[in-house]
Amino acid sequence: MKQIILDTETTGLEPSQGHRIIEIGCVEIKNRRKTDGDFHRYLNPEREIEDGAYEIHGISNEFLSDKPLFKDIATEFIDYIRNSEVIIHNAPFDVAFINAELKRLGKKWGVMEDYCKITDTLQMARKMHPGQKNSLDALCGRYQIDNSQRELHGALLDAQILLDVYLALTGGQVDLSLTGEDDAGAENQHKIKQIDKNRSPLAMILPTEDELDAHEHRLESINQESNGNCVWLKLGENK
Image 1 (cartoon, rainbow, N blue to C red):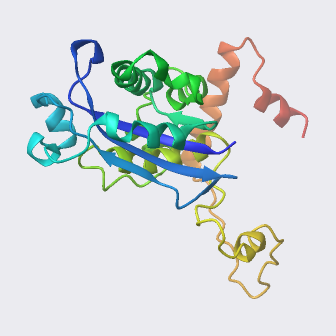
Image 2 (spheres, helix red, strand yellow; image 1 turned 30 degrees about the vertical axis):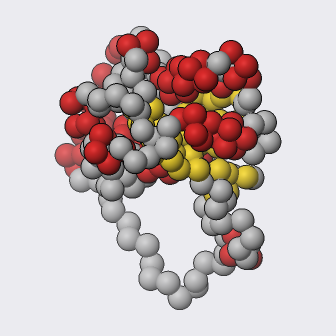
């Protein structure tokens, strides 16, 4: 099953209030590698964009005036996601908008879930980092992913950033090179490397007397709070 990272931009926050999709951005990965199979479309929403939404993504009605309608790209989009796993950050938001667009086309179109499996990276992150911020920006900071180009939200840019976040959430980045490139370099990364015998000796930094005293006081405090069960003190007694 191919995997697709998806993001959308919209005219506002609530599809139930008639807000529409104005941008769909997708990147495709196979075997944890990005392919060249991106899907990116701007759409004419046939309604005004809210000021708050414009401040987030910077996409204007003027820019979208000559872009296709969702119905014009619906078949192409469905064929693109069909039989795939679609990975979305805060999936209920994007799925609700896509399903609202499909509903406008008629019952025969069904819902997004009829065509693909949906994975929500926000739910994944909340399970891995409970009680912490798990926005896309927060996860980029946590996993040291460069999102410096994200001055404004954009569906394709956010999908590309989410790709790095997803790989980090699911075991780390393997290789983002396009399919078909030489894999020799990746294979060599897993070979055992010999340490250079001529390297400079490693510096040894010893604790100061003040640091040793502070350490002992801390262990005594732990020992009192644990009713004499400080493991580190017991280890010291057995030496």
